[in-house]
Amino acid sequence: MKNFTYSIPTVVHFGQGQIQKLGGEIAARAHKVLVVYGGGSVKRNGVFDAAVQQLKDHGLPWTELSGVEPNPRVATVREGIRLCREQGLDGVLALGGGSVIDCAKGIAAGFYYGGDPWDFPGKKLTPERALPIFTVLTMAATGSEMDDIAVISNPETNEKESFSGPCCYPAVSILDPTYTYSLPPYQTAAGTADIMSHTLENYFSPIETNYLADSLAEAILRSCITYGPRAMENPNDYEARANLMWNASWAINGFLKMGKGVAWSVHRMEHELSAFYDITHGVGLAILTPNWMRYVLHEKTQARFARYGTAVWGLDASRPVRELAEAAIQKTRDFFISLGLPATLSELGIGPEYFPEMARKARIDGFDNAFVPLSVEDIVNIYQISL
Ligand code: NZQ
Ligand code: ZN
Image 1 (cartoon, rainbow, N blue to C red):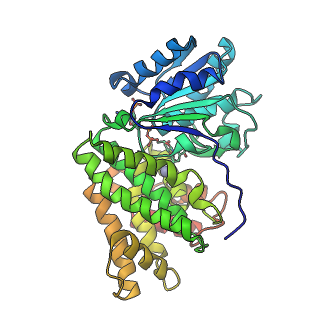
Image 2: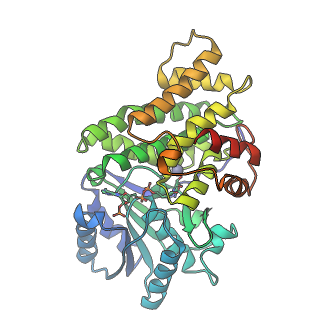
Image 3: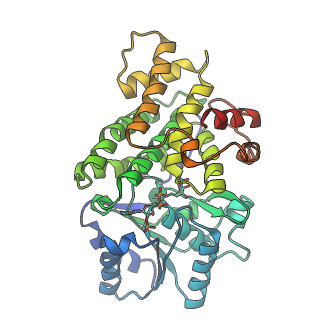
């Protein structure tokens, strides 16, 4: 294991009715907030009303910023910063999924920054200071409610990039599983694929000596395999929604990567797909992940895939290692298909035109810490076999 520092400062209030704690938590840290949300799902499912009631109960004025796009755009971040500055707001409350939360992080960090907020993802700047961020999560997927990462898109340049920094951890997150009951099956499936991908990115690392992290990763994966389909069959299954929600937070809150090296290889490849084609993040991951697995499977990596097959998919450990590894990869692919997710890029209307450009961009920072390092050519090949 490598040395590490463990610090996940977000206060999480988990469970039905925990919104009751929101007003007090905000009042302890801010006076007047920007309420950020997306295309209106929070107005239809009661989350907006419940959150606003909390603000009223605690005498907190607010301003609204609606219309945050899935794959949130830097223009919306700029608008939020403008509102905060003009109206003297000192906190940001995100109501929604990862896109809304990431946008809120961009606004909170951009508020104190003299330049353009695109500098954070674009120039890989680490923000040093941010307004306090509060979240009410409505979708189990990205883990943004408990991590310090934001992913922002710039459609003018076909770029989708992330930034992070300790100041971007939400101060407080409300995780009420009933707020995800209204999530449509397709988004539930995409969210499940995203959670699994975060876990797999950490699990397939060159460092395999963190027994605790690896065992937790396997448990998260088994949990997704159990509860993803259950939530799709019965959207109001509290146990399923609750487990997915907590899985999502733990898949990427940093715990799984402590003491390890993680390159986020599949995520880098997917972010290029989203940047060029504005596709749903979890869908891109579901297509790429089994193909990445197939591509990096060889003599030296097969034992890890075999362990994954037995620990996560319950495959018979007495089978030959290579056979186990291949069966595990097939199981992964079959599972995503069983969730109703596409298995090929062509199903999304994506062709090979931009593969070389996307592969070059995906590699910008190199693939340090990768389970298997990938060249630009390798990435093009993975896109090709995903067609
Ligand atoms: O816009 P609204 O009306 O809210 O509708 C959303 C949106 O259309 C809808 N939705 C969310 N909760 C709902 C709901 N509809 C009905 N009922 C509910 N309870 O679902 C759609 C997708 O929402 P979005 O927030 O875009 O999804 P997700 O949470 O998957 O976030 C995706 C974004 O996060 C980034 C992705 O790249 C993408 O930009 N990521 C962020 C990460 C992070 N911050 O750590 C890591 C991830 O790997 C990921 O890259
Ligand atoms: Zn992701």
